[in-house]
Length: 261
Ligand SMILES: [Zn+2]
Ligand SMILES: [Zn+2]
Image (cartoon, rainbow, N blue to C red; front, side):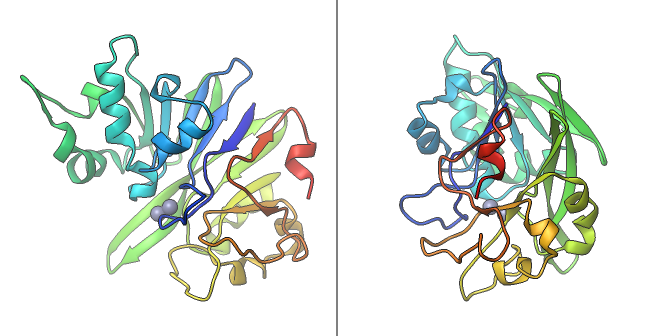
């Protein structure tokens, strides 16, 4: 099993990087796309992949750097008759808005057909505290707090899964919230953590200056991603595993790719 970062940038990622979408590939070369942002067709192409390789996609939340490529994936897989309808795994809380607020404008009108989300995807909505199974791998959803405006909360759903006794936690987009997700930090062996850097703090992403205060044993298993700059702090000196780079591959059969600094 391998996890490869198609990009490690933020929504406003600069040239040379892509949105923080990932592919999880099992030992049978089956692929789960983790988030499908508006960069996805380019970032997949750079790794030699096309929509034909994407039979399953997981969506964490509704920002365009995570869902902006879903119209492209829907149309390309729909109109290529040699391709099966992809699986879409998503929290039950996001399904309605994904269609009604994000995708239906472009996708609902098909010539001679009124389309729904199910026209394009096999939708697997995941209940609270639930999990989904992809190629026999159980993937648990961990809700994080991403954006809060008054009473309107946009959560993001991180994921956790186990490979060979190793517990992997990908936060997806999240505010700094050590109290909410500390149990998952503690129980994980490897953490992939949303981390913004720079002077401006958006407060909807964990900032490096906040994360650096975490206990050493947590930072020691933490890889940082979703940043928007080329000049990075010295994360390894501060006790982290490091910043993930675009294209970086974590091979769960090869521990040197997981723990090497
Ligand atoms: Zn994002
Ligand atoms: Zn976001």
